[in-house]
Length: 69
Image (cartoon, rainbow, N blue to C red; front, side, top):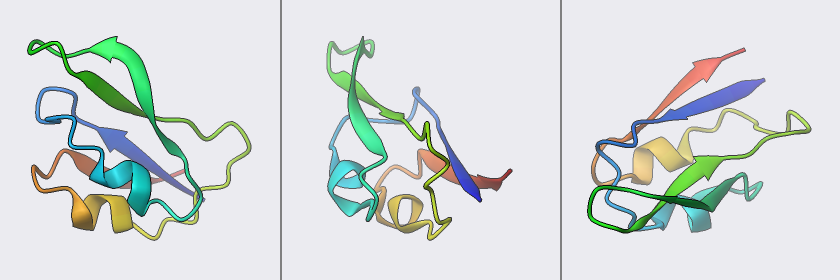
C-alpha cells in the first residue's frame, strides 16, 4: 500500500492534488499555513491509497512525496 507525505512548508494550497487523487484521499485541512491558506492533508483510514503518485506528479511545488508502507 502507498502513503504520501505532504511538506506543509512547500504547499501553497492550490488544491490540485485534491482533485487528482483517484481515491479522494487528499482533503482540505482545518489548519492554515503562514499565509492563512488552508493546507491539505492525507486521510487514508482504510489503507485505500494505491500508490499511483498522481498527486506528487501534479503538485507544482513538489510538496508531495510517496513512501511505501
